[in-house]
Amino acid sequence: MPRFLVEVPHEATLEACELALRRFLESGSHFLTNADWGCADETHKAWMVVDMESKAAVHMMLPAVDRQRATVVELERFDPQDLEKLHQTHQD
Image 1 (cartoon, rainbow, N blue to C red):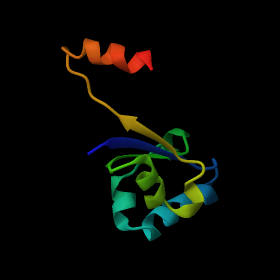
Image 2 (cartoon, rainbow, N blue to C red; image 1 turned 90 degrees about the horizontal axis):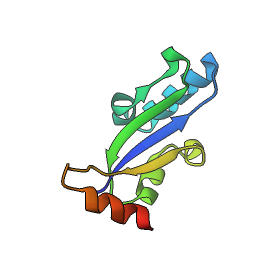
Image 3 (cartoon, rainbow, N blue to C red; image 1 turned 60 degrees about the horizontal axis):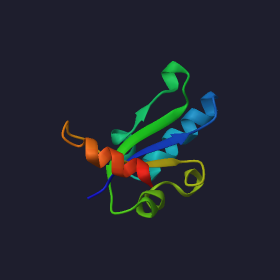
Image 4 (cartoon, helix red, strand yellow; image 1 turned 135 degrees about the vertical axis):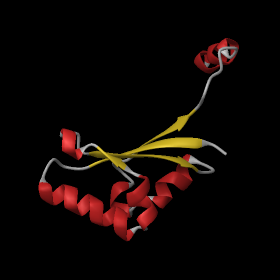
């Protein structure tokens, strides 16, 4: 199953941080417990790595207000022998 890195930014205010946390909690406690937050380091974003069938499915699992601003990146792992695979990826 494909794996995705999800980044969800929010404004750099206490109110925005609290609202982001509440939205994640209201969407299901798994969002809050699986997200890593950068607020304490003044990077007001949440990150998660999820296994889902598609980018569209990832977007649909997010709170509706966060879908537009979220960045979803499909992740891939390479072995030392995967140099050819890397070349194929960059030919597109």
